[in-house]
Length: 258
Image (cartoon, rainbow, N blue to C red; front, side, top):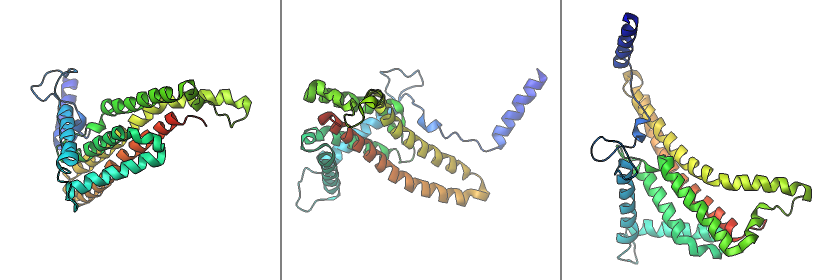
């Protein structure tokens, strides 16, 4: 018992005297009111920042463009650039048939990119760092394009899994591989976004923790600054990648034949 007590005391002393920071604490989901358990209906920090994301998008796309000025202000310029960028992406990848789904894809891009950028604000919560959020987005895309594929093409949509250009003996094997890869899409789609966002924020927190050590504090500050700049780029790139993959999946649904 004495040995155990001494061990706890030494551990406590080490924790007090050493550098203690927890880079994953920033991803903890907490209730907005009180300290009770989190249920599906509990308002949390995730709920708050998702609501802020929607409000910011509304401010950019609705309030920022209401004047429809010939010489646009900053908000109108951002809205017009985003609109043109995503519209061109959908048209180039999914074709003219895919343009009718542009509003949905535009909404996806705006939600992800705004949530990513809001997460870079100090003390903010990054909703896209949670697989629960990105999985819902990815599953919505997966279910939507699958339904579109069958509605538009009927049983011909199954041609997506049949590689007619391959030798006949290999086609059944390739069909199994294609089916597996198709159902893995929402997994990779969601993990890619959440994993990259979470990893970047965690690394920044680690280097920020090293700033407490005076000897390496200047290097730590420089590292955090560089990583923060990189995360700004990653915030846009990950939204872009998620959106462009959605366009590719939509293209497969509209034109399934190999």
